[in-house]
Length: 438
Ligand code: UGA
Image 1 (tube, protein in one colour):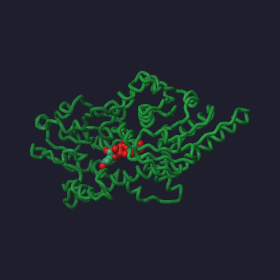
Image 2: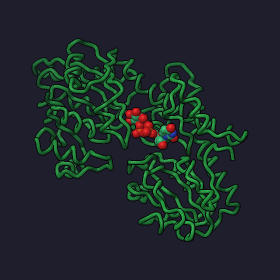
Image 3: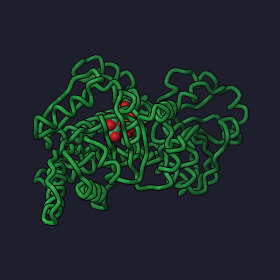
Image 4: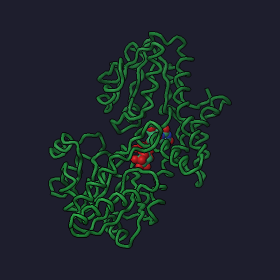
């Protein structure tokens, strides 16, 4: 099938590459000329394991192309996915300017039946608004004497995670489609035919809410685990054992119960905000989600307080950050908890050194006064303590004996409980995890 994807960000690019790999002809569109130029030269703008190889393979087979022209893509494709950004406005609302602009431009260039599918995370009823925008623009065309064309709008939220995006896309737990016609349903079933999974078919509004609800529920699980970690520290319990004990209950499940320094990234913080706003606007005060957000903020502050408490005077102490990305296997720094934590410590006068295998180039753009080092051992030299902020696999292979010799004080704050049973204490480190009953 000929498919267009408008917006070549994380979701758009991964979807485009994966849809071409299951047999479709895909044209990815982006209005950033520089990005499109690089993509055409097979340069991937993000760090995502496996993406570049798959992309290059699909480009060679001529099943994947890149353009800046919505016109070109619209004319060629039958199914057009909208995967542009929906950033947060100051009041927490999702900013849908890009979505509206794209819908207008698609309408202006429709030459035959098109199925327009929203893939960006959008508030409920956005599908209806896209439909109205297209209808209004088509009406203008008819009035100018141009021929009639039919279209459908559908919603197909994406659930992929950064760092495991390809696997998530190819082997999803489910595919959700929100449709208004049999034609739209059949087309989307055809698109996803090679992917063997459950398909949830519903109306557009429900599909939109499923995405908001899923991300908000996962954020709630994390905040619940983080709140538990606070209690565990106070009563001498171990949050890891508590999560294990809870997780065996099939109704609860162990995943997303890892306490740490809070969730970050381009999705959870923005989507929780947007769901709170959406609820408010619909007349419901979603206080549970407000607490989820607050717990997430408090968790970062609690980590800073722990460091202040154990290091005593922060001014002029040298603290080494192991990882800065919002999670491992990505170079994404958007809403990374590391940013707030490092800033708070800098405000107290700490000197921060940092190492991240992939995110340093992005982190340098937003973190001022941080010394980024080429490897862990260089970074640790002369440090008064280390703090683990991202659980990169590489950090499980550190030679801590070697590191200890070069540090001024052997103190480690493990913001992700990565070293929960690796015996750092036996090596002579003062070790502090999250919610371990300290
Ligand atoms: C999230 C969802 O998991 C995806 O299903 C969704 O498609 C995506 O948002 C989106 O809306 O586009 P992502 O933000 O890539 O994916 O990353 P996650 O793996 O969900 O992690 C989000 C944050 O939660 C990270 O900062 C991570 O460190 C934190 N986290 C996760 C915890 O603190 N504890 C956990 O137990 C799990």
